[in-house]
Length: 193
Figure 1 (cartoon, rainbow, N blue to C red):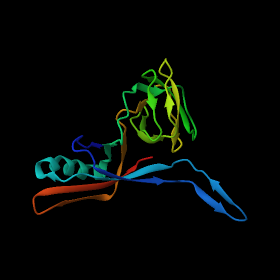
Figure 2 (figure 1 turned 180 degrees about the vertical axis):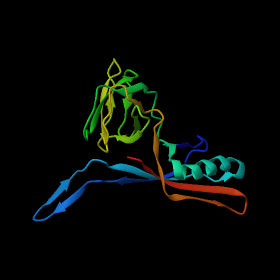
Figure 3 (figure 1 turned 45 degrees about the horizontal axis):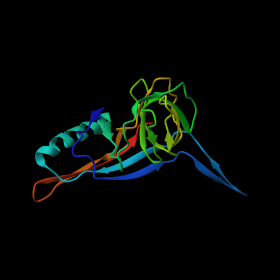
Figure 4 (figure 1 turned 90 degrees about the horizontal axis):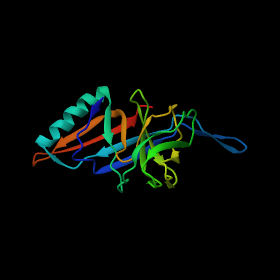
């Protein structure tokens, strides 16, 4: 897996929710939810000089084969969450997760991004569904979307302060050099699972 440099961060993101569920139509319409809904994000980067772009281009070239980890730029600062971890084992397509290790009174706001990392290093990107405040012990139950698509065990790491995404580059990536020797990059990254 390749890790992109932190700077410059993406200046545009186009989100796509890859919904595994479907609607069954007949006399009435029924929503059938299936586990596995995940994100694909088209990341655009600001024009870079050739020297700054070298690291990005080389990491993306290798990342096309090995996968990529990229930080998610947040619309607002997501505060100082502490060192949150999964509190207890979680299985199934749950839409909430018990968390401990948060800074007491930390506010996880609706639409904050969070990454949950299993012990094998696989990361899953989720969005906070509803604002919640951690109690005085740093515990909270956070509602999320999409539903969980993997089991998590007690102590798996949660990243709220600096969420990121892991995945493969869908259809390669694009870069171009303009007449003034600035490089523009974009890549569509789809989560592994």
